[in-house]
Image: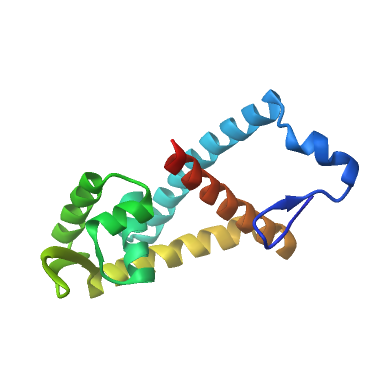
Length: 172
């Protein structure tokens, strides 16, 4: 199978189309277990890398929130909640924790003085950059023996899975 840029996986052989469209319970079980193991190993690896390099690790929520602020600039809490697919009250708690750590700041929205904008501070951008560099080093090492094609395919499939998980959550 190959991944296309159009966010779909295409079979190399047409006779596999029907077989590929119906996932067997065994395959679904492998995916479920594999993802559970992946999440545990990824967190364990991130923690070990942080301990080894002496850096301070952002928790996953803070990392993703700072990433959203880096990509899209200052945002309202509800916009962050929508982007991250979580409740606004959860984002508010994360913002408070990140604000205490000096990673974000809140200010009035110049377009609507009643609303609050959250933005990353220089310290927050620095913490995000440092963690991204640590993670990039780790995954570069882990994937060093993979071909460029396999690394690209992995990236495309992970992006597709994340998009499909977001769509599933929105529909339920």
